[in-house]
Image 1 (tube, helix red, strand yellow):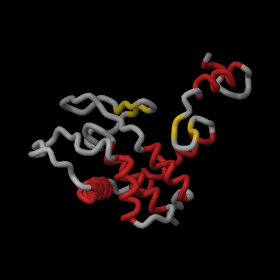
Image 2 (cartoon, helix red, strand yellow):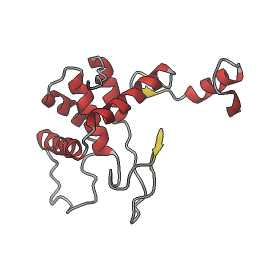
Image 3 (tube, helix red, strand yellow):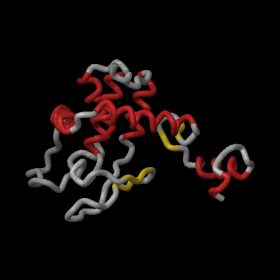
Image 4 (cartoon, one colour):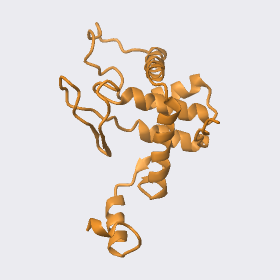
Length: 175
């Protein structure tokens, strides 16, 4: 029997997508891709061939998948994700720069996002597990108060430290 997928409400899925795409993790270029991915709220090590310079394709894919699990059709999910992620699009240093100063229209950008999402999904046999891990992380961070809506709580560190100092069950040995 296959394990069940984690499904969010549409509002929670939208918050998840906004939070997931609020930043991307990058790594410093190196020959063997051994440097960790680092962003403002995360640092992680991956297998060298899993991702290259950033985790944007993974974040796009898990955001689309979470929205589709919540009831969005693929085109709606792609449009939602494209709108949020447009600040990260078109910044690749791979390939040739665009000729001219014309900007790409929304549909062309949405096609690029769809292409990245499909490529990531094709490369990963266990996509459901990857999506469940990201959603589980989101739900856990929300449960402990690190996330308010679709943003990280900037005062969470101070609140957590205060709770730890009062002996309310937080990590006593971390002081």
